Image (cartoon, rainbow, N blue to C red; front, side):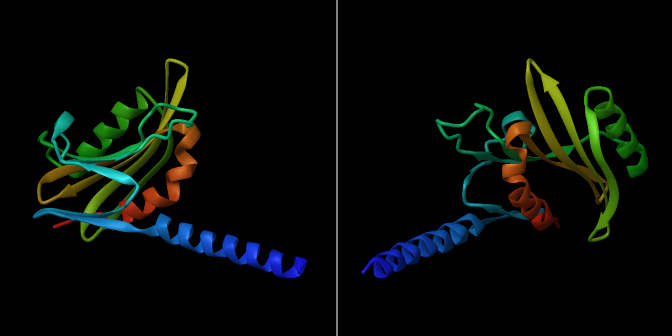
Length: 171
């Protein structure tokens, strides 16, 4: 009898873990004329254009969370004019180096577009924030995809955010 009860409990726990694990991987797609991206269902989509964003994905903050910061992903089009993507990327690096500690810097090509990835941390008023920014040079335009997070919660989102960044496509 004890064995049977343990088996029932174990079966319930495994079912819950499988269901919860699948729920974590559920995604939604945002497809527009000039880009597409997939994102986890636990983000709320905002296309209001607030702060000149093309879109923003915002977390729902739990009441028991250690931080009140709302983690988010956003996309902006930078309408500044540069003669080359190298000049644009170099300028972006310098601006960030002046205000933050750069943890990772990488240049790469995605679908023929030159890209720059910066991961950096900023300390502000006794709080630490971590950002991932990917700069895209696409058809003489520049796009910046940014993830902003409280540094304490950064690792909680890192796998999901990498999937978002990897799914992002400019058309």
